[in-house]
Amino acid sequence: MSRVGAATAILALVGVAIVPPLAAQVCAGLPSLRERPLRLTATAAHYTYATALGLSLTGGRTIYGTLGFGRTRDPELDASTYPISAEIGADIAIGDGLFLCPVVSAAVSLGPYDFELSQYDFRYVDRGAGLGLAGVAVSGRWINVIVAGSVRAARVTGTYWPTGSKAATSSGWSQAGDYWLAGFSVGVEMGQTLTIRPGITWPFRVTYPEGAWFASPFGRKPDEVSLGIAVSIGLGRRGRATR
Image (cartoon, rainbow, N blue to C red):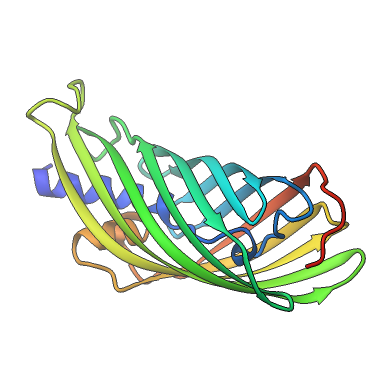
């Protein structure tokens, strides 16, 4: 495989790991941390050629931090990537049941290593910033419904090198790409503890060719609308707070 062809295949694969939208807790369709200071969330997203799974722990209140780990798997290529991410954001109340959510994040992915289409190993660094808006559509004693939307801008730098050598060697090289990602979700919180949140994401303003490799799995469908779901559990309790 040529150097350019290998870069395309590798960067395209890793793109699936960074597709989930960048959004604060409420603006991701999850309850705020005003009542429960910790939140454990499992996510899954389906794409045409791959599946992404993730697990994250969030702590804070109006301002929060999140640490996450994930795995993106493409069975056709027998290849996987493992992103490790960190996020800092805020849920800012701007009205009765309305929130504005600025957020910044960074992620580093491990892999893929030594997969079928290439003799290269790969890693990437993703840096992004976004803004979300959310509203509590239904507020009850046992069930709350949160409707949320977000948009993010991301810059991704990928580094790859021949299998068996080190990334720092002169034989390695890097490429970068930009894209924007929008998301919409509806979260249903039950018993002030468990939240189930389906959602969709779609990329836009993709920079070709590099951005397309990151905006969707394998770059095969840069405008693909993807479906995902999150299951989240609130941990701890501060006492009842006014939403």
